[in-house]
View 1 (cartoon, rainbow, N blue to C red):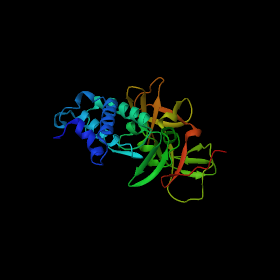
View 2: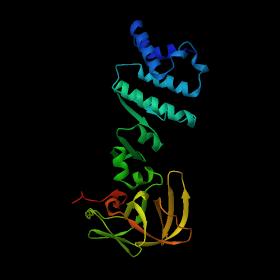
View 3: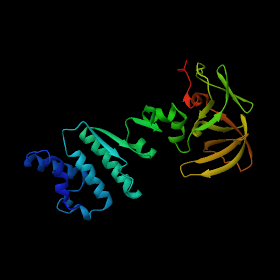
View 4: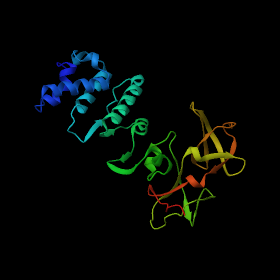
Length: 265
């Protein structure tokens, strides 16, 4: 805090004996990228939280002799209205520097906004690595289904028979063959985006209807199991009986939390 912004950015280079001309070139280049050129002579102690975070990022980016830059929850303390600006700046820096950036966050929006590839961890274990689209459309674990998406994936206990699954007396067809080589707790998972309200289908009772801005979420009960469906048509009333249809293309089988579907055939 007692050093100027310039000296903060220069510190990692000076600490390694880099020539002062190169130090100046790197500091001014990074300051321009981060849009803090006008702050170079100011003491870090007087900076706003977002500019302090920019400065921290700059200290990591100023060196050219690194293969990867690691960020650990860098936007946690930033006001919401500034987060979007810094997210955009980080994405721009990634494109400009061409370096690998490993970014740790509990915010799925940040992860899906930034990432070329996402690593999802649960209790210290990697449960899936993939693109944002892969994580959304084919979760390898029920944790991924819950964590990615809003609302998260519907997870329902079921029984398996051939290429069909059944729950609460209802039978659903799958477009992929279940992997029956493993024993354990069997569940089906389907995202609310792929649950449709139809004239015929699985009977359910509307528990709640929520307008969340971009769309409406209808929460229904099939027996004791809650099912969320994203619906854009005429809205049912609470307590009303409706019929739900699950898209077989996006209905997944899980055994003990792990995807148990063979490749589509």
